[in-house]
Amino acid sequence: MSAPMKKAAETVAKQVSKSAKTTIPMASRAVTAAEASSIAPSATSSTESAMPWEGWFSSFLKDKMGEERFDKLRRMIVYQPDDPHNLHQAPNPMTKVNLSEKGDPAMFRYPSPGSQPPVHMPSEDVGTMHEDPFVTSSFTRDTMRRHQDPANPNPELEKLKVALLPEDDERVKEYKEKLEEGAKSSPGNKGMFATGKSDFDPKGLRATMSANHAALNESLDAYEPDHLPKPEWWDKQDEVAAWYTERDLPIPFGATGYGTIPREGRIARW
Image (cartoon, rainbow, N blue to C red; front, side, top):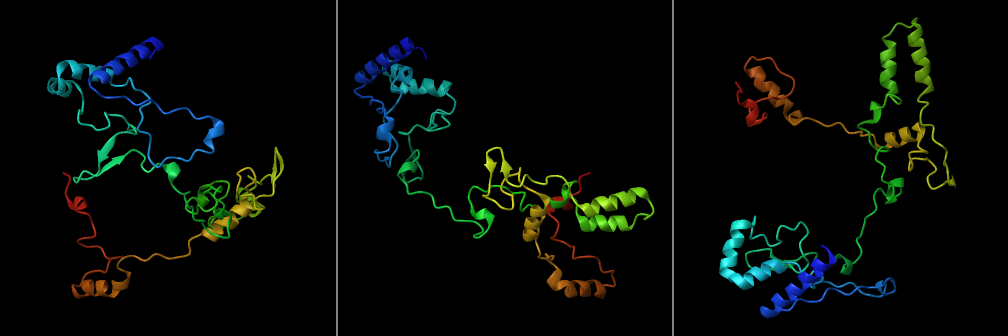
């Protein structure tokens, strides 16, 4: 909005508010950088409008047409006229919304976040590198995708594959040698960065530039799951086997039957 239009809108808004016997509060005063540290935050958001000219046209029409005729016209034109936020994504601070049928009003960002005590962030994995809240890396404990990297395959699985191949083949011998050497990519910069030597993480896993495969495999071994999940029928497998034996039926793998498949999966699609 240009300066002349803004000035004209403010003048019209003041005239309309005066005729409607209402007052528009002044906008919040500016705060200097020196005052900011000594001013305590308020528990409530500001109820003063920073744009007193907003809604001047609607107020002007309501004053000239009457509230009843204006409401009929508004409902013919405006989409969702009963929206308390007037279709604003971020509600105005002075807008009150009823949270229940009892009429309990609530305002935007009340109580204000600045008036609340600091957030308590509990430490994670006390005694490990992840206790530091600035450590956000996930590759150090992502065991699910551990062996999907071609540069760092599963050595035990690769050895089983090589054992099935002809030993006198030169390509097999070459691959065996590479497998014994291990991954040569990402050796890590040993804590040497452009700003100098860094010693905040001796294993080098906090920064990707200093990460290496040896320390990564050690970290993944520590997070590797060691539990063996059991199926739902494991504790009643004797009962399931007896059911098929009594009916002279072959015993299947597992316990499949009615109720284990969703209803949509049992409906024919032709």
